[in-house]
Amino acid sequence: MSERGKLVTLGVIGAVLAIVVAVVLVSRGGDEGGGDSSTPVVKDDQLTKPEPGSVVAEGETASVKMKTSEGEFTIALDTTNWPVTANSFAYLTEEGFYDGLGFHRIVTDFVIQGGDPTGSGAGGPGYSVVETPPKSTTYPVGTVAMAKTGAEAPGTSGSQFYVVTGTSSPFDPVYAIVGKVSEGMDVVQKIGALGDPAGTPTKQVVIEEATLEKG
Image (cartoon, rainbow, N blue to C red):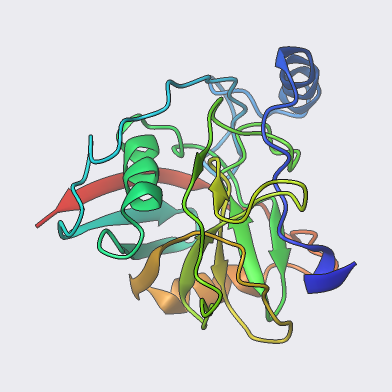
């Protein structure tokens, strides 16, 4: 399988799967009501698809600050070139969707991937948006993009995102871009060291709070 096992999110495979996964993970201490801040929570939120420009307008300056259990980093949203994707990411942030979720996939010298409400790699927010990438799209270190399945159309986004930490594998130009890390790349690389070549985290890392900032 290309691209180091692909950057995939299977979306929502139905309420039954979400409930089953939630039960399994909660039994491991992953419920919202208990445990420490380094234990990912499990959510079954099903959100309504946001209207384009409903949270951040095209060309508007905006960023998302990710406070994690390993430190903080900031994502500058690319609302000019990727207005639909950036707006959806901002919407999820405003809804508190990312708060408490973990990075379920950490591939050394490649990516850190999070934003799955089930922690299984198969979860999503209940909707998707599409913003087709140009064939010239590249993903340098620090790029924040949205994960998708191989079966989904290029540029499809749910809630799962990844941050590029290395260039050990090539990327096909099929992933919609959110923006890039503008501050705290050292924290991202620190998280990126907490995995293995297969993508298994060696330590749980949690997004304690994601905050949208404008202007």
